[in-house]
Amino acid sequence: MTGDGEQAAAVDLGGRVALVTGGAGGIGSATARALAAAGARVAVADIDPAGAAVAAEVDGIFVAADVADPDANHDLVERVRRELGGLDLVHLNAGVASGFGLGDDFDLDRYRRVMGINLDGVVFGTVAALPALRERGGGAIVVTASLAGLTAVPFDPLYAANKHAVVGLARSLGLGLAAEGVRFNAVCPGFAETPIIAPIREALVESGTPIIPAERVAEAVLELFAGEMSGECLYVQPGRPAEAFRFRNVPGPRAEARS
Figure 1 (tube, rainbow, N blue to C red):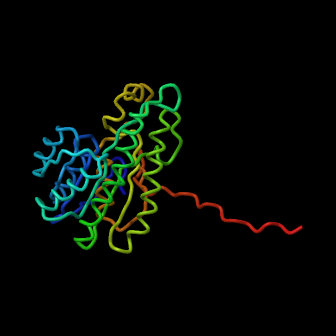
Figure 2: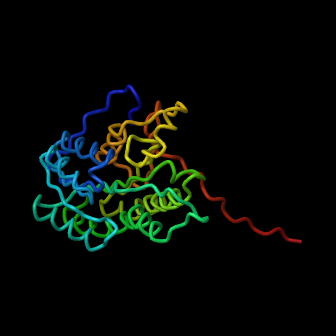
C-alpha cells in the first residue's frame, strides 16, 4: 500500500463492472473516477441526484437509491446486472455522521436513519450483491468504515458504534466468504475530505489536523479490489502507508487453579 508522496502501482480492472454507493460524496466520487480510470464500468448510486453528474463524468450509469431500504438495494443490483451485464466489484460507501448522543439530544428518528444508512446499508447491500457476485464466479466487496470503527469516539458515540459494527462484519464475513471467491474488506480512513467532516472541518484545520484527500482513500479501495486479502481493515492516515490494522487476539480461557 502506498503512502503520501509515493507512486501507486497501476491497477487494471478492465472488463469488470463496479458499483459505488454514496457515489455523489467525496470518497464515493473519487472511487468512481479511480475505477473508471482503471478500466471498470461503473454504476454510481446515491440518494443525492448530484451522483448523476459523477456517473456522466465516468461514462457510467446513475441509480437513485436509498441504501437503508432493502428493496432499493435489490433493485439497484438488478439494474446494474441488466444494464452493465453483471457485477464484480462493490464499494458500499454511503454514510452519514450522527451528530448527537444518548443524552437529552437523543433523537429516535435520527438514530434509526443513521443506523439505517451506516450499518443497514452495508448489510442490505451485501445481501443484494452476493448472488450477483456468485453468478460471476466471485468478486470483491469493500465497505467504508472509519478509524471510528477502531477506536473510541466520545464526541460521536453512535457513529463509532455503527462503524465498529461494520468493522466486525468485514472481519467475520471476509473469512467466511473467501472460500467461495468473494473477498470482503473494509477501509478505515481518518478525517477525509468528505461532507461528513463539514461541521468540524474548520476546527480540524485550525488545530493543524491533516485532512486526507478523498483520492488517497479511493486508492486504498482499488488496491483492495485488485489484491488477494479478505477480512482485513485498512486504515488510511496522513503520512503513513495504508495498511491492515493489527487487532490484538482475544485472551483465551485459563484453567481454574485447584485448591
